[in-house]
Image (cartoon, rainbow, N blue to C red; front, side):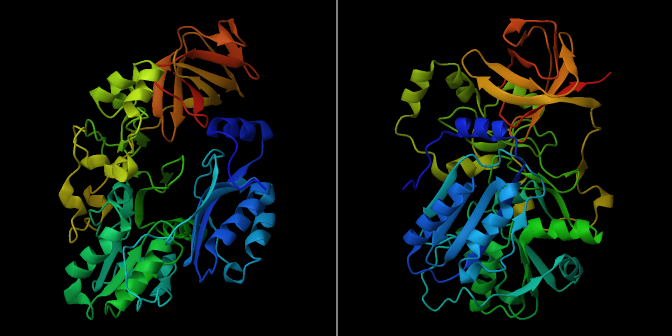
Amino acid sequence: MQLYNTLSAEERAIMIDDAGKQRLTLSFYAYAQISDPTQFRNELFLAWNALEVLGRIYVASEGINAQLSLPADNFYAFKDSIEVYDFMKGIRLNIAVEQDDHSFLKLTVKVRDKIVADGLVDETFDVTNIGIHLKAKEFNELLEDPNTIVVDMRNHYESEIGHFTKAIKPDVDTFRESLPIIEEQLAEHKQDKKLLMYCTGGIRCEKASAYFKHKGFENVYQLEGGIIEYTRQVKAEGLESKFIGKNFVFDHRLGERITDDIVSQCHQCGKPCDVHTNCVNEGCHLLFIQCEECATAMEGCCSAECVSVIHLPEEEQKAIRRGIKNGNKIFKKGKSDVLTFKNNEETHGIFVADKPSRSVGTTIKKEAKIKKIYIGKGTHFFPKPSIGQFLIEENEIKIGDTILIKGTTTGEQKLVIEEMLVNDLAQEKAVSGDTCTFKLPFRIRLSDKLYKILD
């Protein structure tokens, strides 16, 4: 009985590409009393592995928290597999705003003490005594109420690239840190203000709303389904999006574009940018924001030290990182001492909210779009010679063309093709159906797209 992954992420990515099936990325959660989380975990793994589900799922005695992807063809079979359990019948499944076949490359189902780590030890706390759920239209209306205090229940690296207008964004690394801070700072407003909260998919607000009601807050509201469901309703109903920027997600994509506003800066030069990446030095893996120019200059690294490390032989790199565990420090992002540009700490202070209107220049717009045509996608990266391999799906490219390689982690990288191999032979041109390789000054990912820039 197989209860764990047997394939590497790279092998799984190749299988996904070969299968040629569209995949859906989705998330859901449910608070419930689960008597045997381990047995529950094993049942889920067996059922979902057969349906080609990939993702990161946590189960605990208090419920389930899942972010995953699956072939679109298997959606209804998957839905049947969870509705076997009474507490998940009719559950809302949050479909991602942007889809990526490679959003998850492994199926990981873990048993945890809690599905949302809150640091609470209080037997009188009832997690099911929650606040009032609001849909997008109701949420927008309450945002305009002068007696409303809206709080972002996410971490600093999430709210930095996108948030609701007027939101208070606690400068915290974890959810558990935010609860006592918010309680203390808003203690004088337990009766006279409406506490309005939001998070990515609703799970953190669900617990936070119960916590603040437990602590005496009388008017507690939460965004139903979080930012993901809010965005769906805004599009479906033609509403104004009060959320600006990108929604951070915990998968390969690292973010979903909600509006064209760019509300954050590159952590190395300060240029307007909201592309998250992980330092390519596997011994560091720091999560930070990096613009196209810095990605090229720093070779995808967060510091000069890491640039030096990635040029060492692989065995030396492994020796350096052997026994070192990064843990949550990879999320220190804009706070890391190695980054030369620090975003303004005050913008994340508890009682500092954004200016109410974008018309007065509170955000920075994206630069003009580059004229380009789609060519194909990345299929492999050879790290030692630093060579990228691409499948040409449409149109053609030739030596001398300026190309753009684009991906959630890679960002947008431009270069001129000086030489290339087409189907393993030196050629001047590659057309639809060809596999071509050429040298790159940066790493590509399997989901990266290849474009040709037009004059």
